[in-house]
Length: 188
Image (cartoon, rainbow, N blue to C red):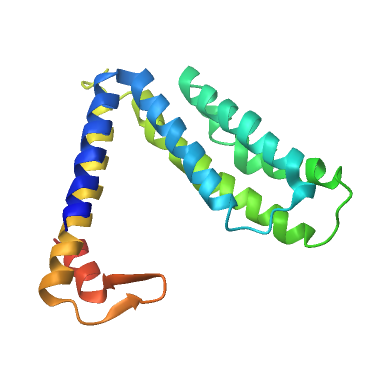
């Protein structure tokens, strides 16, 4: 419990500092989170030495370009950059290595790593680009609401799991998560 509480405080302070930094602070925080998530995701894939150029492109071209497009507010491009252009070009970059073993597996893992860790994560700071009549310049509140909702759900799942948890959801993946905790957190 102490580790979990400490982690929540670290997240709360980090996100608060980013929110105080406005658009730039939020963008930098989620860029760093995206980089870390992509790095972690790729350690679990079939990437090999042959994928060096593809990995360099993912980390040092695709990731910065996606967040730059969000920064300049080019919705039409940041909403299709990865799922259209990167999905089409990444296999060509990988094919240049000449390695054909597990080609489709390696490419699909890289593409979905980029979708989950870069595309999806980049849409959190993109909330600041939304123009809601009567609430201009308050995109930071949307992010605060998202973070508070997710954190509250996590806390409630933990509490419900401790109070009524009997049936593990995925014991090998996350031994402390229970069906009762999930349902209690979701319904609360």
